[in-house]
Image (cartoon, rainbow over all chains, first blue to last red; front, top):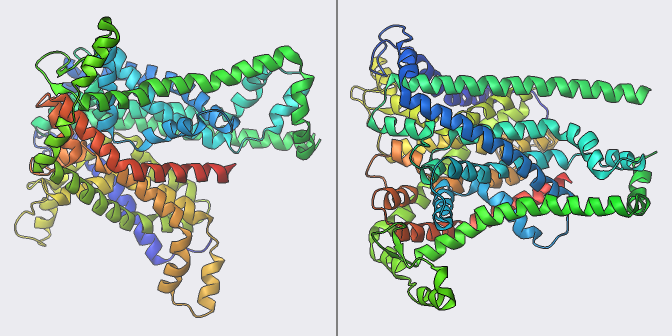
Length: 272
Length: 322
């Protein structure tokens, strides 16, 4: 679709983005509030950030969350990429319908169901709830998001590249690592980041599957929010938003550069 | 060599590369399918079977807090004995207590209403984005996706400070003199609607945008040249063409919203009844695992149709992308 923007289009875009961003901006602004009241401005201060770093419980939870997110995102990326390959490369195998169902269903499955069912599995397996069980749960639900992201890149992949490599004598494994992987790498990286942030974010599944000693940051934030809104929570949230925003924008820039480089290489290859 | 020629050689490559590599290839292929398959079977499908089994058990003061527990040490007879103890009692209990029925109905209604509101809010945004200059579109797309990356919990939390009686919205409205008494929004359905629309807006805008972006705008121009007024051109051309996006967006919002826990819990207060909250309370407050399992089974049954629709839409999109 290509046409000039009408006034209606501009107004709806501006209002839409204001709606999306204003609450986050207000949250960030009030994390620098001197006053203990979250909604009354009492002057600029960074004291809530100091308080946050001195809160040992919060720091412990942040460390647990970071480790869970890192491990689960990494394993989920491997499993999710395999699932994406299975879905795009093998159009016929026994149980393919069930398989694609199990990949897509977790994307929309209400978290309370996923959380409860995983917990009951861990209990009947005799696993103690804690770091391991949260990580397993996070791998399971994030790998499906990775699979969808990688799959959308794989369907547009030009398979003649692989065939050319194999005609020239490369083994399938070598072909995968030297031809396929570099092309789908940006999708794998964004899949990893998506898995990482989903794990970082998750409250419901973690509450079901975590146990003593493995309280994650969202669980900690949730229990404090229930007691009331405090600027310290605003400070924690601001820091989380900053980390994620910087990560996403950096990844977008890197992706863009790679894309430009790839196009240049392709043009050069065609000329040569 | 052209693409066509290359794909013709595809069938012969297997024979050319020899037995060793083709074996390796077969093993690698098996592994690529088998590893994620087994993982999802173990951690996604089997848990549902366990949920169903426990929903037929009775509550007990023990760990785990239900009976019977399958004890494999007693062999097959023990297994059969414990199977006989299973019953549909928990499901009867769900039908007897009006609380659960009301919770299901109100979840479906709240999710339905907020899905419609999300569509109303999201459509103009997606439409505006699709009509924006091509150079601006990636930036707009990025701006829609970015809030999705920031924590769900944080975004819901941000609204508490805005919607509270002494919150920022009321302060603002009082200051400009629109109202002279604070509006009560927190702990009402309105707060839940706002929370769901806000949190799920990117899920609605993205599929709508990708449907609208593909549309050929010259169709509208042709209709208008032929004397069709803009509103009926919209309903006759734009909207039907964007229907796949509308369906995908609505399902992506509706299904998780039915079982939503965080939004009704933090914004809806204690009076609002939603099934995700009921399940949570049965589990964490009452520690009644069998009843919460039964609640989950019924919730899943309610969502089977929309989930299957969603998967078909996904499969179709996958086929088109091929």
